[in-house]
Image 1: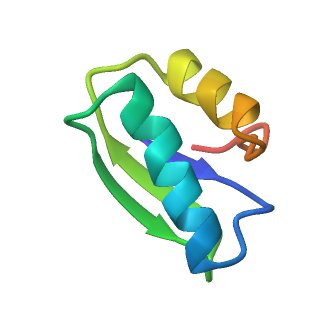
Image 2: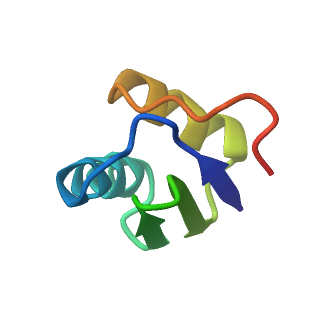
Length: 66
């Protein structure tokens, strides 16, 4: 699944996003691209669960992200 995260603007942000997702699913495969503000995630967790943890971490996924 893919997320657009508007305020993920640097590699530090990408690390924070990665850690947040891994807190839900340690086995998740995550490709964070801060330049394009996108995150591609292969996970067994539900999309809503990932969106919720991203919001808690301060990196909410934009509405309508594919």
